[in-house]
Length: 471
Image (cartoon, rainbow, N blue to C red; front, side, top):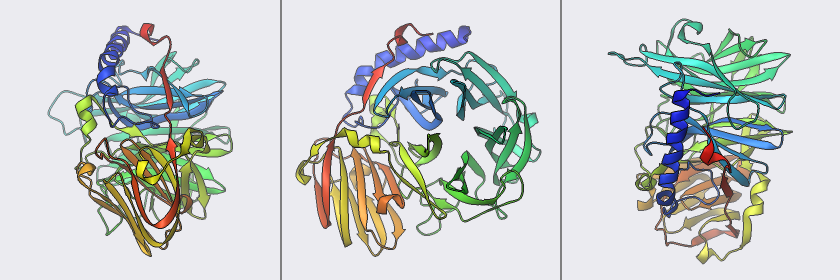
């Protein structure tokens, strides 16, 4: 499925990626085992799914500018979460209802076909604030039978189809099959600046009716982005990224939050939301999304933070941001725990001495009090009651984050060229951050712990063999 604009955009993106390949590859902060944009900007993961033998990871992709811009859906696929193909973008802003950006969404898999739901962004010309007026946030559907290009795109809902009392900010549809039909949840902002989620139902994947609104009795932020609603081990969880939640001590330390509510009752009827728990205490996690892979639920997130006061020096090389490693999500009571997928263990090369550690997977049993200093840039220090992550000049504006924890019993640290993913107590808490140490710096200094450190190999990433001719 294509039109003239689609064809021109496809050719232009291909040229931009080829032209920027050497510059991007020269960056010492290019990651070894995280998915990144070929060039330009990356943000939210989209359309995460497994279809047949393939895992598909789509993401918000602005190829023309590492500082952002008009969004496409970038695309990787893999059979094993280790060997990846970089495919041409699946979705381009090439229709009247998405010409200012193919925004975030999700994938429904049926009969070896991908049904990709997304928000088409349109900003009308005029003197608008683009919050209460001037913006079209359109729910759209693209269908792909081969998992490489769409066979069709169609508009399903526009602003007039949503309930009254809302701003123009309705977006990020998450769709799944349930009880012989289909459910969709979307993030929304009300005219009185309250965040909420809209729940829709459909019998045919295309015609949707609003059946419920999920929110808290008291205001909790002004916009709930990137929603995800799922049942895990008999408990419903509502995952979202609320904007506008004020800091409360060591809670909500970032400009925007991401986390989850346990949901009691029936999402389609009477319900109660429990206490909101943050998914991450670090500097750089936003818009996480989950999907089912057989009996396990996997999650990836954007390793970035919108509107933050810090920067990324990778912009100088023509790219910015990456995704987290895939993580397995499991339930512990009313909590969600996350842990790197076991497939990543295949990237372990050999144990490495602490003084030589660069990109590594560290597993440590800890004393009651101790610290790790990584490549002279990041210090993780813990004592009964708290853990602190402190970044020096390599933080590029990132300073300190604190995680309340009764006792740190164990640590796992995944350190890539420019990121840290720190898992406490088998995933009870996580701190995710980008960092930028001296490229020549090596080593981990440790007190109060015994650790095994494995040097990490690279993900195998290849360009789709037919990409040069794809339009």
